[in-house]
Length: 172
Image 1 (cartoon, one colour):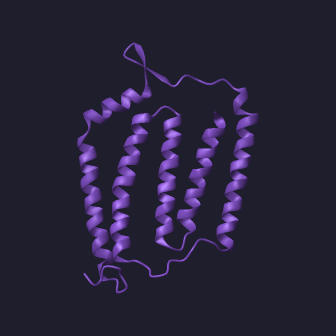
Image 2: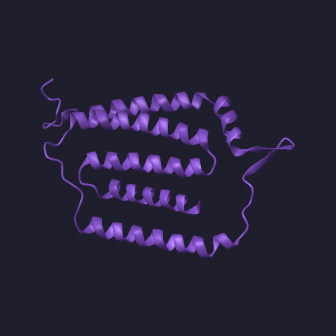
Image 3: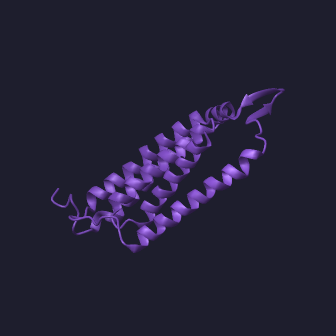
């Protein structure tokens, strides 16, 4: 089962490489989706079902809306594709790091003992997931504040890209 986690981390690193090295914002958004899904799969594997669901909904629901609006206003007629020496060099480095991590985990960490992920809380053992649910209901106003911050971010991005002269929605 450890190989699943390492595959998820490899997907995460490849998504980060696509975000960092892509010349077009469309491929960066695709890389962000890849990073968000693979990171939430890692959290899901470690038992955080509710946390991974909230992160996917907030991240992809909030930040991707901002990207779609800004990409619609500042669209390139011919977006550049991924490639180049720097991109492939970084991909080879990411693969080397992933394989080194895989051999490290197989040789060292599998021979050690694994601790329980339960939390001793109020005289009983609960999973760490339920403590996150109670925190969500106690400080839910922070989630509302984050939603308003995403809306403000959307409007600020729209103001920044409004003056672009080659936008896709200039005729409107």
